[in-house]
Length: 136
Length: 136
Image 1 (tube, rainbow over the protein chains, first blue to last red):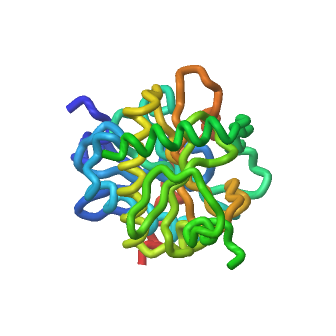
Image 2: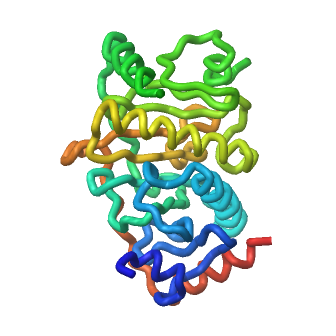
């Protein structure tokens, strides 16, 4: 088994477990962006959002909700970012679908908002039409 | 109705619609981080992840999956970030639960990975134990 997260699920590699049920596992990121940075993964392997079954995504979303409450009552952050990266261009490092929960405190500078790119009405109309056409 | 996203759902403010079903709506962010930056929202108002019903989160997750495929086949990005901000400290601007889908291309510099903070084993053990205790 080459996937480090599958090995964690199998118990072959230890983790700092936060929560677990039949379908998903939550554990601390060992290279955290902030105190209390948690990863939530489905136990069944998939590489990213695109190849994960919709039912699995729904179960992971509910575990993310549960863990967000754990973080909120325990660490009392000022906010929480939920981030999920698909493919290396988006910052994905481990190729097993995972969701980051990153507690935030005011002025911590952990993540910056992007600078919006100028979008003309024409651009937006064109892109929306293209995407709608792919709805299948 | 003060919430701008509820007004979009009600049809009182136009949007660049990408996809829609009974429960959720996907439309272009008019201040995009990148070409094809989409927001997915539940039609029923909630403020953030913490006060959104688990069933609603599951439905939104499935719409995010659907739109990610629309983006992937249409724009062929190198990656996609899924980002959901809770409260102003985490960058939330509109107080209606929403998920960002941000197409990424290699070396676009749209979002930077965070610099990991040093975490000792002791810290991680303590935090994991605290969070587990809040599992209820």
